Image (cartoon, rainbow, N blue to C red; front, side, top):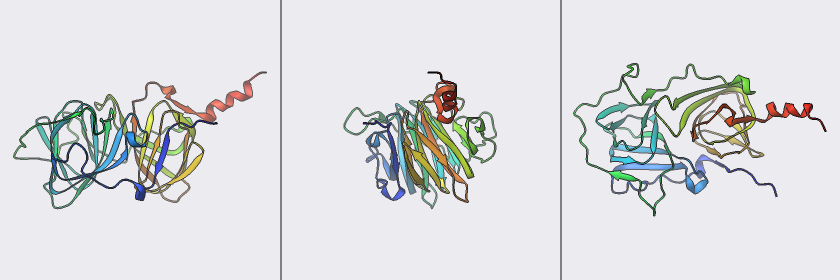
Length: 286
């Protein structure tokens, strides 16, 4: 019997329905969340989801015993974090450290949707509640942050320029841009957006960390523990610790995705590219 490392692929139409998440049933209005990755599907370090807030909706002021990262997909979201409030829009992102109270609201006339990542993984219903609620007042004015100001902390706007080009590990046509990192303030997670050009590929490899993927646009052949899946917009995949996976964009359009890595990489050798190490076989004796 061959044991396989934890891994998962979920098509968009098979994801759970959007619901008011625990423990916000009595602490929100017009708020729903689609669970992407959590303990129920085998993830142990992270929870991710797609949140939506209706016009006039709110999420009451709370704090968690975990970190939280958000990335706005559409609409305008206001966030109160500690004693400051900001208005975020498409491709803006924010980070909420451990134990910092925060709240959300939608004063616009359109639904706002955002990607959310939490680590360490929040406790499930029925056990110790790790979210605490408080009363908090919003300031009269909520403005768009100046992302170019060095004093702007834990906020940013994603631009598909720059980034890392990990060509030396056997990849080609791949660019990744981390935006939630240790330098940004996170101690537990890395969140990045990736870009694969048509024909781009990354050979079979594994990690000492847990990775989740949320497809944004294009199509990608994702190999997971011997099975190849077609990743399309809205689809989700999880590569647990040690899960062998590969990427190949066989289409004519770029492939884009959001990825959450937990915990953070401890060392360069956390990624093992199989083809690189396979070269050693030609040097073996006996």
